[in-house]
Length: 210
Image (cartoon, rainbow, N blue to C red; front, side, top):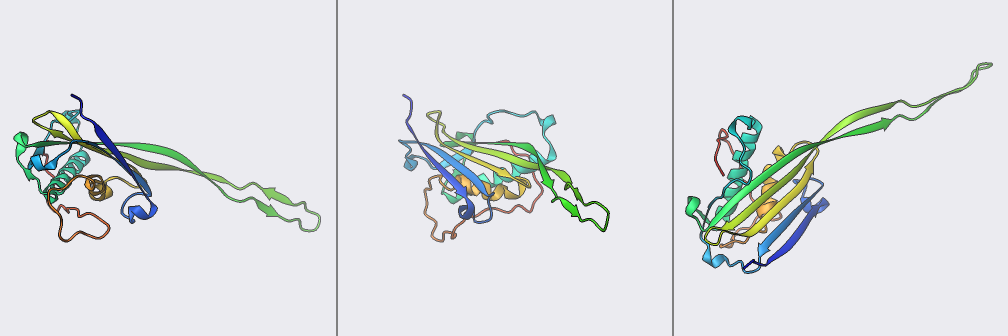
């Protein structure tokens, strides 16, 4: 029997971004109506949606995957779930897609006017037009949580945003915003005002299969 789902969309713009997220981003959450966390205690990694051949992975992708793995581990731990590998109650599968969008920006200088002197005519020169190429990284981050016993998706979050610099400096805060609506087994006695905690990695990135 197909489960019923409820959808909640959050748009984080301007002040809601608290200067750590892009000017406008969105979080869309889909959860099963019968989601009951009292029956779940452990979590593990699910199967990647689209496995990528190791020879096609770049060093930057390896670093992002390592940091993404670390942030999801932190989020699940903060919510009271223990890691138990493939036999866990919940299987978590992240998917990160990044594409570059290039736009040509034109800049026009004002017209210049050269007045006449005595018997010489006046001239008006049209302002020069310059162009710049703006590169924006469009990020689509999805985290799907599956009930292993029922083989059914019980929670799914999606984070969409565009970054004028790069997604990499914003990964921790983006994952925190995405996982913030995920239900918790424990209540944080010392909640951080206005933002979720993030983990900071000081070690070399390592490859870890989701």
